[in-house]
Image (cartoon, rainbow, N blue to C red):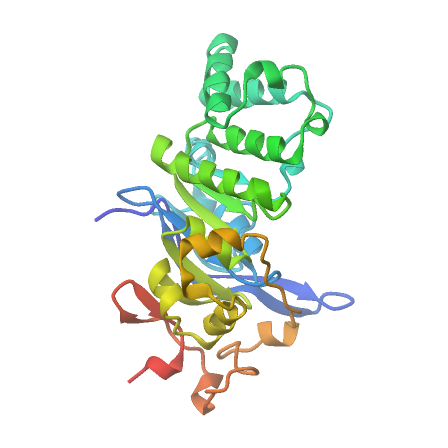
Length: 325
């Protein structure tokens, strides 16, 4: 039996709400997810802004501790790891942030930052670290000469995001968690970054969790998709099956916002500037049953109970009472 690199088991994360935070709501609510197994894969996590995607990413990166449930790394509770295991976790699981400025120290040169990272995480001497950095920069289309002596604010947005990817790939991790990595870039640069991420999977055998509110980029890069609504995963599976035959009413609404979503990846490629956003209401996060009940035209009394994920067809699952027979 293959042990997943990262596994979430019924994970929830609550935050306080209101003037003094007395009302608590689940930003992440009972999520199960596995990533990293026998072979590298590209998973996408899709949902509206504020639905809990970034909170889930921080749990997987061991930044936030879940309120309930278990977040596992190589089969072990990641909050009970030994010091040596934490160090290995940091090498194996690397983030790519939405704003690449969050990656670097503005008062330190990028070269110096990368050398420090290589020496600390890989235990290389300066010469070895410089060689590894040069190879990694070449992979993302940059050179050490172009980077040398410059601080983060001296690079363009596209260059800085490529440097952010290079920093993450420096240790050749088993998993990249990329949280909205192209949302701050011009449409003309997005394809380049997405292609770079796909190349990382092939070149380094790295799995990728790509997090976005944009179905166009998700469909372009992904193999499997998780659709998130108000902190819960409502549908998951092979991305072509989910795109071409959506099951959950919320997934259908997302896809209906893209009029010709069945036109395939080439059509999606042209739609990369598209975004999907709505107002987030805390009252929906607090629901114990299906969180889409206020809007669903198919709701019944049973929907006031939380549905369990069910496999409707091979590699395609949904959390919806309509499919329980």
